[in-house]
Length: 193
Image (cartoon, rainbow, N blue to C red; front, side):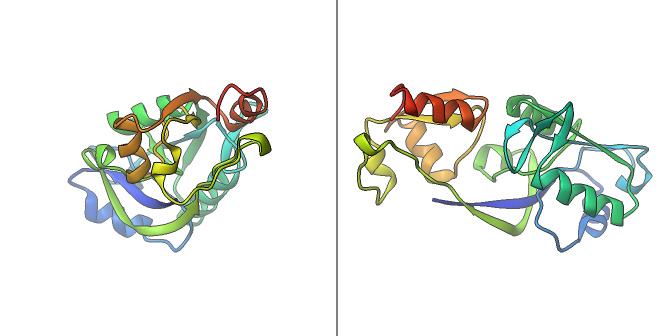
């Protein structure tokens, strides 16, 4: 399955201003908060990332770390926009995006998020992988090959429309955790397929 990262921002009357400011050619996805004044006049832009998705984004020694915080930092520094990047559990990050209280870096587009966020064209595509133990290996050609399986997923994450729809239709069971390290330990222990 291939999912795409998008440049995103909270729907607002300052859409054109935001698009001009963020029109940069870097691999990033960012949600800009709903504002009462244009982005460039903000004192400090709040950007949230997932605290448990290494190497893309995580919390290391009390600070946001990883690929996406680095990309966002570089872009915002080049635009001379003051910012703070913080790492939180993903569900908290999603709530901040929904409430319009923070920007979000590194997020997938889905129909639920399209209700409150605007998306740009695709900036970066990423392949999702399925990991299994040797004893439980199987041929994977389509989402239907996961029927009846118990899958480990990251809490609050969307893995694309096809996966999300199959999940909603209970084609498979999911066990949500905060990071992939826990998923790998559960896989090794036989607690997920």
